[in-house]
Image (cartoon, rainbow, N blue to C red; front, side):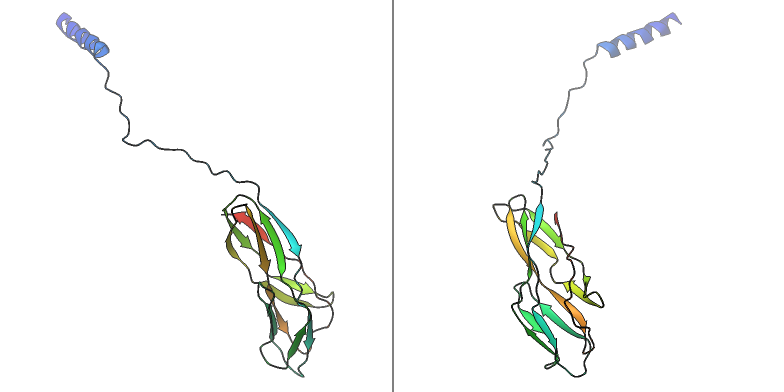
Length: 168
């Protein structure tokens, strides 16, 4: 028994006094990064205006008026149903944030109303843009009015965009 205790004691002493294993490091260390962005702002700088749309056809339905982002209007799909005039202009927004950052723009559809009737409106801009080297960008939004017919109630139709901008 004494011999067993002496052997166990010797093993313990050796374990406590033996050299520790050498520390190791990876071949390549990891790095830490953090992207810091300035607050992103978006401001409306111009309201969308389709100009004047005259219901010219005798009996029609399902017509639409489309404005591209540069303000060019396509008035109806069938000649004679609609006449468009005036000085149309797209909605315009100014973005400001971090230089060269990618930003996602969204704008869901909504209804235009004259108080008595509504017309569906779908904005034509959703996607990504890149801010310029100063951290700014001006964008334009057009859209499409649908559901026009010879029985559409006349008046001034208005609605409000719900445009959002988020860093990607």
